[in-house]
Amino acid sequence: MREASFFWKRDRLGAIEIAPLLDVAERIEFLSYINRAPKDIQCLFKFHLKEGVSISDIDSLEFLDVIDVMHESTKPEEGHLIICRIIHPLSNLNARTKGTYAVPGSRLDENGLTYIIQGPSLKLRLMSGVMRLMSKPDRTSARNLNLTPQKHETILSEKQLKLAKFAYDNGYYDLPKRIKITELSEQMGLARATVSEHLTKIEGILMDDIFSSMTDVRLRPEDARSIVLSMEIDMQDAGMNTEGFESLIQRMKDNIEIELEQNPIEFNEIDSSKNPEEILSELRKDID
Image (cartoon, rainbow, N blue to C red; front, side, top):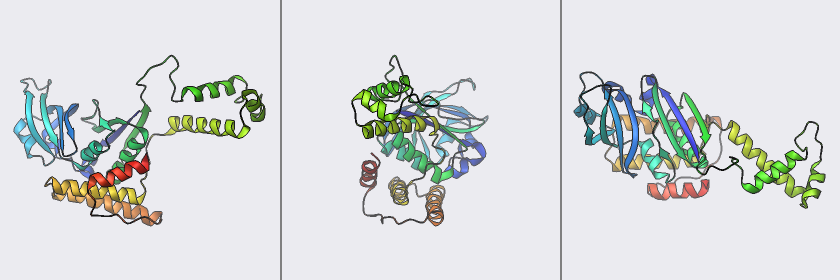
C-alpha cells in the first residue's frame, strides 16, 4: 500500500472545476466516507464558512449536495460538520478503482487543495495519470504505508530481504566488490542467472521506492480515452452535463491529443457501447 498526496494552488482550482468552493469556505477538511458507491459518494466534511455565508449556500454548488448537518457550530473557529454528496469525475473515478481511497488530511485551505489518497501503487499511478490530464498538480509526493509493522520494516519480501542481506554481508555492494556474482551464486547454490535476476529486481524495487513521486505519470492513449469516456458517461447519467464539467472533459480530451502529437503511437479504438464498469474492469485487468 502507498499514499500519494496531490496539491493544487488556489488560483488553479478552476482547472479542475472546484473554484466555486473558494466563494463559500475559508477551509474544508475531509473527515471520512459515509457511503462510497461510484454514483453516490457521501462524505463527512468540516466546513469553515466565509463570513456572511450559510450552510444553504453550499447547495448552490454544482458538485456538492448537502445530505445532513451533523453539527452546526456557533463558533466560526470550530467549523460545521456536514455530510455532502460529491458529484465530480475525479471522486467518481476514485470510487471506481475499487482500491484507492481519500483519507483525512485532504483539505482546502488558504494555500490550495491537498488531495491525499491511499491504495496499491499501480492504481495510484492510474489516478495520478488522470489528474495530470485534468490539470497537472503543483506538487505531488508518495510514500509507502506499513500496515503490518515488523521488526525490520521493508518493502522487500522475506526472501528478497534475505538475498539482499546475504549479498551485502558478503561484500557484493562494496566498492570495489569483494565478491563476484558467480562466487555469490555458488555459495548460495543457485544459478548465476537466477541470482542476477533477483538482485536486479530487488534494486529496481528499492530505486522505485526512493524516486517514484508520481510527478509525471502518463497513461497510454487507449487507457486515457477509456477513462475519459467512462467519466463522460457517468456525468451524463448523473445529469451533470454542466458547462464546467463539459469543459473539464474536453480539456482532458485535448490533452490526450496533444500528447499523441508529441509522442505518436498506434492505439486501439475504444468501444463506446461499453458501460464504464466494463471499460474500467478491462483496464484494471491490464494494469494488474
